[in-house]
Length: 227
Image (cartoon, rainbow, N blue to C red; front, side, top):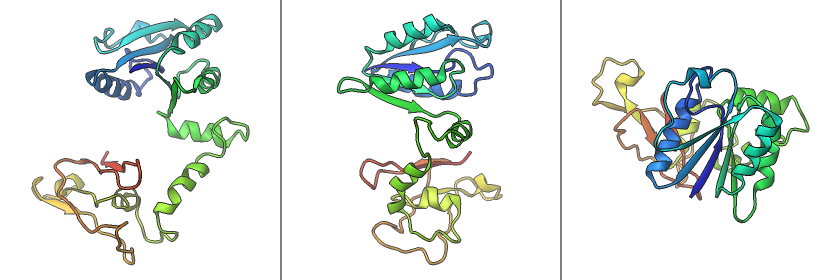
């Protein structure tokens, strides 16, 4: 698959913490045989403060942060099978989001990758005409049927992890316990949580602090990770 990413920068982490996300995801995509081009603007002196050279697993395209550069970039990514517009490019974000959204058709898939959720939420909630609409309300409506109506007494960890197909567990030492890291402790369920096929009781031992749970509801994969 030909994939075009439009983001802040792949080659410079200067004022750009998302670079680590981009590098990990794109390198993994390339390892799976996908052809990735990363389009980044020549802005904020990032090209003068690169911390990696152009990597062998992606084609880096640096475009002038001008209206002409924007137009050329939009045309260049149209031929990709998948176009990914990341948040926080830093220049022409609104124009890029509008252009990429309009590219979606039978031959081209489009994705918005939010790498700074607080900033995006502030933007959306402050503008009733934002193209993302009433976010996160519409997203919550997609998830609401998978959770009990009353979440009293629940923790964020229990909702995010134990609401999946299995319960999450981490080594005790990961939570500050002096116990050996080979000892795994399952986080408790809150009192009164229903037990059914939707809320299984199995709690496999986690091999690491980051656990990806298998899909249990349609195509949804529930994942949790300790920071």
